Length: 219
Image (tube, rainbow, N blue to C red; front, top):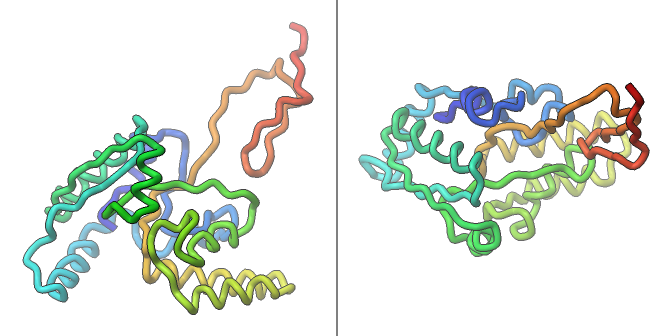
């Protein structure tokens, strides 16, 4: 809640990305355009931090290490989050940058406090986002598991009614967003340049550009 996602997509990524306050993109679950919590809701974030510190018997959080893999954009986002958490919550953040191979090893070993990661779907279905967190390992670096969540995903795989299956998957997402082992930032977009002379270039629903049948028209 103490992250200004709108500010990040407007000032850093600048490719018309949508701020993310849910796990499954709104292109699949339309309701997720609004999401499960308020973007940049600093007042609520302060209340929750105060409550959490009281439960832990702490007066303030120790320094938080935020890790990210080498990239100009990742670095800029990490610095923005660092500033937001300091300004909004008074939390000090140490940034930790690693090259991709080293970073994957660190994430896989659980050698991080907060780490950035992204996901691009293999196919246009909610299950492809939800099943990442079904069990620890693979692409689930969070160490989070939930038996009720697992049971819902299992049930969804045998449900043939489309509406009923969507309800099951939304129920699963609600559990994930309540326990929130990660903080969504934004939904990816694809960016390319266009020239009307270039014809017959196909773009799949997942954003894959197919040049196989392309050709250039004469002036």
